[in-house]
Length: 219
Image (cartoon, helix red, strand yellow):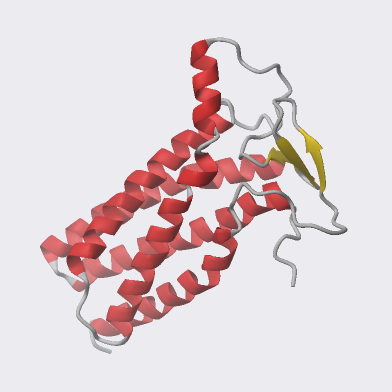
């Protein structure tokens, strides 16, 4: 087996992961619940937003978990509360960018095409930075607390936070591969990229479940 063969196998895995997880990741949106009979039920949240009840808990349609406390009155508290509402919007940037990077890298490996190197390098940097921003905003949406809500929220928060080192690892591994050009460095980069895409897909499904219910992808 040539040194390029493992990379081609990983390329196929990257392409498959990107295509499989594109759907679940897109479900992570702060929209109203689907119409018709459903185990989810909509209700007005304590801060005036719409909340969607799921088997595991509730999350408002603007991306915030249910609040047991009164709305913050201090400027700092209101600022954190407001910034946290941007999490569902910002999180789409690293999701889309990492999936596009995976598709481009898989295409180059499987079809033996020239890599779109500069564009890929820029997208990886933007992916890592936007992932960090989305994670910080997610913690703000949770009120800088951990494990305060139900298991589904905690799982989403835990996996989402773990994407930060993965995203930074992809960025580091890609830069190392560009400078070293060794097969081993390419394998490390491909494995980290595949793991990141997989984590994003799983967390995208959980994020969609928080808003639409665990059955949101039922056919």
